[in-house]
Length: 391
Ligand SMILES: *[C@@H]1O[C@H](CO)[C@@H](O)[C@H](O)[C@H]1NC(C)=O
Ligand SMILES: *[C@@H]1O[C@H](CO)[C@@H](O)[C@H](O)[C@H]1NC(C)=O
Ligand SMILES: *[C@@H]1O[C@H](CO)[C@@H](O)[C@H](O)[C@H]1NC(C)=O
Ligand SMILES: *[C@@H]1O[C@H](CO)[C@@H](O)[C@H](O)[C@H]1NC(C)=O
Ligand SMILES: *[C@@H]1O[C@H](CO)[C@@H](O)[C@H](O)[C@H]1NC(C)=O
Ligand SMILES: *[C@@H]1O[C@H](CO)[C@@H](O)[C@H](O)[C@H]1NC(C)=O
Ligand SMILES: *[C@@H]1O[C@H](CO)[C@@H](O)[C@H](O)[C@H]1NC(C)=O
Ligand SMILES: *[C@@H]1O[C@H](CO)[C@@H](O)[C@H](O)[C@H]1NC(C)=O
Image (cartoon, rainbow, N blue to C red; front, side):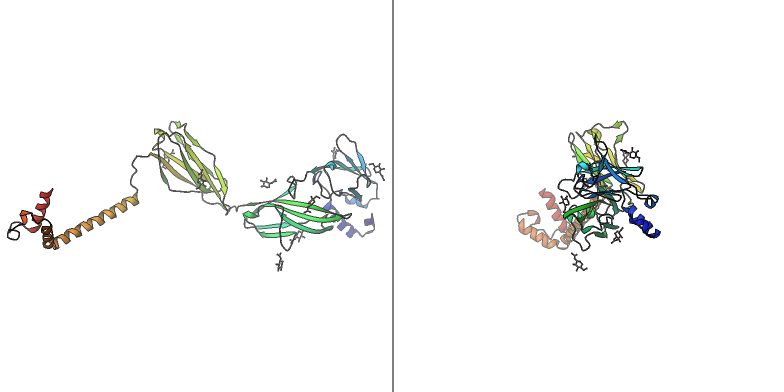
């Protein structure tokens, strides 16, 4: 090893860069078909020491420990502290040992099957959670293979992202950005093209600001029902993730057996808020269910809100709501005004009306002869008398 000849500072630098890429974890997963490596992390004292013999062994299943060398498999290369696979395959799973002098280090390697019709393995994901509207950044880096890579591509849900920087993505997170982002490094080895993947499972979460929970719809709901039928009362709310939505269905003498509260259904709106709904199902409605106030409540640390639902028989009258009452009053007043106007017009044109009337009812003897000569009977009275007579 050449580092012994290097000045100390360079040695330290080299040690740092070495430890960045070495395999610290004891249990490792790799994806079949991809280049893969195991690298022992030498301590600084081991660096300085006389080079000792380094050996790699593998053991799997019933097989004992077998020494690995470059002729063990065309897919294996060994150098310094590194064992490389070009590529790693399913039967490479097992225990690996690195021996240097008297010390032995071991790893457990589990090679996982590539997911069919997918560009990544579901068992080999890096989770990343980003708040909506915050920065989503995907930076494709691979300290070990990057230097060898002839190209890098970024895929979202296995579809290539076309952008200028093929290995870097930065944007304000939206819910649509959720998905699997795969960095793919392409590299050549012995004239063969390989790719190494690194996939992030990106989850976009809503912002953490709280809303005051509120139920949708009017405060009081009258629902017309028929006895013996079923009804579903739907209660929906805008709320926070941890708020609760429930029906108060307990009467003094317990819950009616035909009243069922269904599961809450919660969805996330595009703004990252939560909307929930919960159905109260009443089967085979009976008299007990009528005129009872079924209340739905949403409760959270920001507040509480309630809506009432009352079942009424189809034919039961309901109290006239305020706005309908007002409308009725206006119509009544208008009709009165019209009637008064008609009466006034009638008084003003009473003579013409009388003539008009006589024209039609020419044979009415009460008006013959003495019409204007009877001082005791005013004309309206005559009209009135006629009306009474006719009915
Ligand atoms: C990456 O490598 C795998 C295994 O060799 C291969 O099946 C896949 O097609 C490659 N993907 C690309 C985009 O070249
Ligand atoms: C390499 O290992 C195999 C057994 O795995 C052994 O038969 C062979 O002699 C070894 N070759 C060298 C050069 O050590
Ligand atoms: C691997 O090393 C650990 C100690 O680092 C030891 O406890 C374990 O038994 C070893 N595993 C095998 C399979 O030798
Ligand atoms: C990706 O992350 C989401 C959210 O954490 C999780 O529900 C999902 O199961 C993950 N996907 C895989 C394939 O593990
Ligand atoms: C990507 O990450 C690497 C290493 O973490 C860093 O050096 C590089 O500047 C990052 N790229 C961008 C565009 O931020
Ligand atoms: C790459 O960037 C250049 C200039 O910044 C721009 O003109 C070009 O359209 C970009 N290409 C893509 C594929 O985004
Ligand atoms: C209940 O109402 C909510 C909001 O209006 C709606 O999203 C949901 O689908 C309704 N549920 C049923 C079972 O109709
Ligand atoms: C529902 O609310 C109303 C008014 O707030 C109340 O009078 C009634 O007792 C409540 N019903 C139940 C079952 O809690």
